[in-house]
Amino acid sequence: MSTAKKTVKAASVIMIITLLSKVFGFLRDMALASQFGTSVSMDAYNMATVIPMILFAAVTASIATTVVPIFTEYLQKEGKQKAFDFINNLLGVVLIATVVLTFLGFIFAPYLVKFVAPAFTGEKFELTVKLTTILLPTMVLIAASNIFTGALQAMEHFTVPAMIGIPYNIIVITVAILYGSKFGITIVAYSIIIATFIQALMQLPVLYKLGYKFKLRVNFKDEGVKRVILLAMPVLMGTGIQTINVYVDRVIASFLPDGSIAALNYANRLNMFALGIFSTAIATVIYPVLSKHSVADDKEGFLKSLNFAVSGILYVLIPVSVGAMVLRVPIIKVLFERGAFDERSTYLTSIALFYFAIGMTAYGLRDVLSRSFYSMKDTKTPMINGAMAVLLNIALNLILVRYLKLGGLALSTSIAAIFTTFLLFTSLKRKLGKIGGKYMFMSFIKAMFAAIVMGVIVHFMYNNLIVKMPSDKRIYEVIVLFITILVGAIIYSTIVLVTDKSAFSYLKKGIKFLNSKLVRN
Image (cartoon, rainbow, N blue to C red; front, side, top):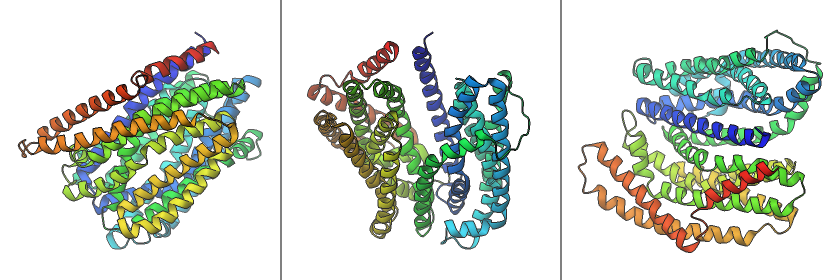
């Protein structure tokens, strides 16, 4: 089997597994919502999960990104044993560093919570400190897991690293449902330690089968470790900027009424779930194609592929975002409203989802446009544009939260995403000249027109149907929501087919086109 065909096959498997993982992640959120709703416990839990991320996430993410190229170089030039020696040494150095940071985190946990959530007091503050100390060790395990993942991916073993999120979510779901009501949110935090340990552990059998043997090595002067640090710096800066953004969002949210942080988290999960399903496939497939065109200096092929991807994002995500705004309340009621997640929780989450959905399409476009720069070996432009968007987001947070409260935080995020996308388009046009902007703009107009018509019809259809159904059983709400979404999809597809006959078969033709390019190269 050719390398291109193997890549396409591996990507397809990864996308399917990723979808399953996201489904289980969504079920985890449903389980937590049922047990804890938008309570003080959930606010404390969500804030406690942010603190380890602020301390370690930027480091572990940058390491995960840079392990692959260095491990691959060792593997090809010096053999498998040298490559595994590098992994063991990197593992030893990273484990020592993260263990030290974890112990420091234990000591300064109250100060960290006060820094991240200055408005938390009393029971809410104490619970957040307790959960933070429980969750801090997970970063040691995540760092090890990321290193194992990098080694496996460098040796073209993708399935197990893609699967590790599934058992993680199953463990948390099981503990939340069986023991959440008895032991509270604390037992969920402990389950995350077990789940994270399983994530790292389940990758080891594959590594051992490939010849890996764990040997503790610690050499801070090792050339491979130095190169990881050097290569990780730009990624570290980009991730750090985003971490600051998350921190500011949570700090401001901590001043809002109880349940606001949890509602913001639930709404963001729904937003990211939709993005993960509908935009990841397009962005994943387009990246290697753009890279090949860039290496071959094929500007025409590059722009043609980019136009395919951008139009695909527009035609798919615009109706999804409009649908999410129009049907936000019934969607949240069907998915979350049970147990501790009451009508107030639905109301708070629906506000955040409405404003998050405004920027959904921009997020999808940003992923594709960022990959277009990466394919040209330009990582500086997306980082600079991202930093500018973070500054805008922080400024808008401070302004809009005064008028829209929780909605202001979500709207700020959407505006910042739209701003970033605009900057990326502008930078790309400056870099390449003509980029087919007219074609993209017409796709946007056609998709927006069809989505607005669909949204109006769906709104009146759902409201007229739901009042005729018995109100004592949730199944009728599920049926009405399903019928409404199905009719909305048919209406949207019909309008798009009339206004742009090529759009109806766009994805099929696009994937066929991209695959043919991959195989040909």
